[in-house]
Length: 196
Image (cartoon, rainbow, N blue to C red; front, side, top):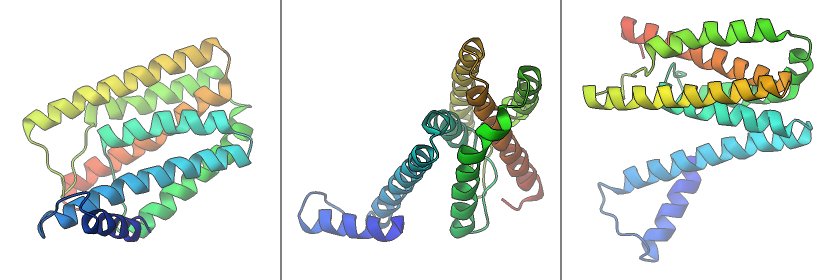
């Protein structure tokens, strides 16, 4: 859907002389618009699910944690875009709706242990390349710094939420870190096997 909208939008902007594009730059522009639109759709989907399920704060914390980790740390990719969409939207909806019901019963000690256990692979492995996105040494270290910054800020938020006794919210961060950690491990393993 974002591809179709991107094509329509880019062609409209081009026809009305709002942007100048050559035949070689048109696909790049469409891809960029498609990426931005897909991120916006995902963001608004999570917010909508959070509002409908009365878990708006869970949706915000989920997005604040998941988006920077996935962007900077990388990880596994689904074999097709449709599988990726089903997994991303399905898992996100399930977490935003059902995590508060489960996290309410888990202890601070267990959630914190899981948080730090699953943060370790992110610290030591991320960022993860894919076959279509290989890193130069400079880009690798730039992304690694952004990974450090991301999980440092997330860890600060985690500590603040512990002090505020918001177990559902710091539990949501734990779940996001677990998801990203598993993705980073799978992506790294795919790279070692040459299947990413």
